[in-house]
Length: 313
Image (cartoon, rainbow, N blue to C red; front, side):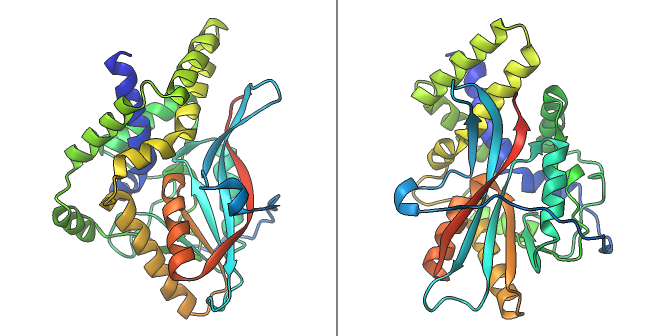
């Protein structure tokens, strides 16, 4: 497979994992503004970890003939087990950082149903993202803007309302992020290299070959924009395998340490008496956060719902 394919696959993973870094460069300090409540219902289904195994927080929804219909992200509801904290539930809301405008509008409505929503953003405490996203001159931010224009989609940092009064920053500060990377002997260039290697490692996998064949078939249909959108969505849905290859046995600052910070802030918010809590993080983070909540707080997953992030019809 040509190097271009491996690079594209690595870029998909890098974009999926590192949006919190791109968001930080677009952030500014601002006051929270209260907005009217919206009623947004979720079609939760009972979840059994024993039946499904490891949770994939992003998936490709298909019809009965195998045609892609949507890229979806999960919302997992976790409740206290015996001896767990005195709360009603924690919802893990998976995000993709490029998606349909309607997807982000629905998420904005969902946020209003929680006492508190914890969100990812590598930035100093108190930093807020201006409405509309502000200017983002980072390399990753530039890639996101280019990708969303090609695919005709919206961007998380532009469409999500980070000024809702119940949103709470639950991520590392830039100083904490740099310190963790130094302690782990990590670097941004190394992170990009791992993403490239992870993409190269999957070049002969069944999923990669299937996605490539789907792209060729869709290109022959004459709609190149739709074909490219379906291919990117397929790669996003398979990103957990690439994430595991990139993380290794010792984890990373990009995922592991930020997940730990989210759980630390969750403990603080529970102590304040909040009962209905959401954690809004990139879908690639949430399997790790779920594991921490099960082991450290005694929460258990009981229900799951799915949101259409990309329309592929």
